[in-house]
Image (cartoon, rainbow, N blue to C red; front, side, top):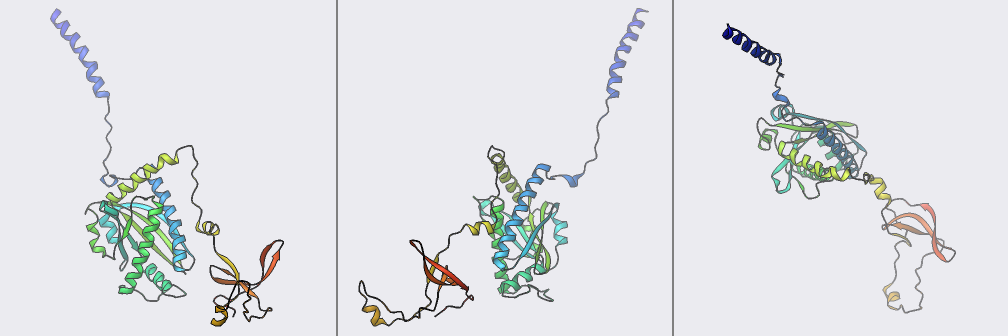
Length: 320
């Protein structure tokens, strides 16, 4: 009897422990392999901010470069496998690698063919920026023009990404079929999409970031963040118009081109008067950087010499 009671007592002690184990429910979550390597919310916000800055830089730079008003907007960031992205690239798109110095990493610049020919038309002196039916391969001259545009884009990316210690070198035009040379076959890339409107043409420009380049960019962002979290407030750089208004230019009040005999110049001595044979009634001109802007006559303002402005001059016309 005592042995049986002892066995019952031991069994009763083991049952609560087994019940406690059975009461614990394991948390099982389905694995989504497509979400592997996805950006954190913090990194996504930081990348969005610097690409919005890049859009402003690029808009100002292209506005000055092509000589017409255009608009650049960030449409979004997306992470997709390189195979899916390569299959979605429109035919005849312009692709060029932007290599990051000695690191051996590159991001890819992609431009729609409509944007390419619109920029080329404007840079070659066209007024509309539209070429009808331009769905063809680029000529050698057009390749050189787009290489210069790609170099301009690389400079704006350097400034927006704060890559003072790294230089982005624009490579030559490549085919979409060789993009696998810059990415692993199963790699997931980040694509920054920009919409550009120029002279009535709306097209897309994209920057494709392989993992190696994206890691360099995120590390650069993290190095910049401690500076922005300090006591000093961060002020964005003024736009190009504000910076131009602070520039110093050379201004002069002068006569137009005159002819003087060499013998009169040889005869000059201190105190002599050189006759310019220009009627007093003919005004001079106010020049800015060597370009005539206004007609002007010499006057005095107190003890200072001055110029009184008259009619605005026609660009490219000098008064004799």
